[in-house]
Image 1 (cartoon, protein in one colour):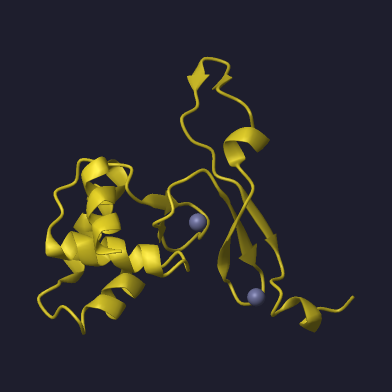
Image 2 (cartoon, rainbow, N blue to C red):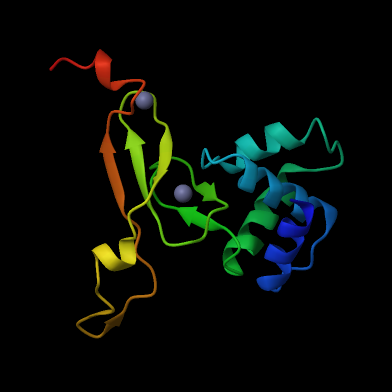
Length: 139
Ligand SMILES: [Zn+2]
Ligand SMILES: [Zn+2]
């Protein structure tokens, strides 16, 4: 796992410092698409020297290098995703969970150019009720 994290960072031309590795590892192990604050709260007890600013700056750097995705699925908070392969998301309207689903947005929306705009990324999100919440919905 450690070597995976290190090579993932190196592949994206990010120098693998301990704090960057810790944040990348957290994102790879927690597929919950956490916010920056959630990452900070989870890692601060383990790495007391880690500041909130470092978490924000590291996430910004990782996103810029394409090592992490910044999801625009939450109106209030940016959420981060350690899975950078082409995939879509599902957001539960009851519990707010954001799940990875095996739909490839770039194939579902097979558009490379719209007018004179050059498209580099597509984010696709479905909304509904997750398996835990769907039985609580009126049919
Ligand atoms: Zn749910
Ligand atoms: Zn995801």
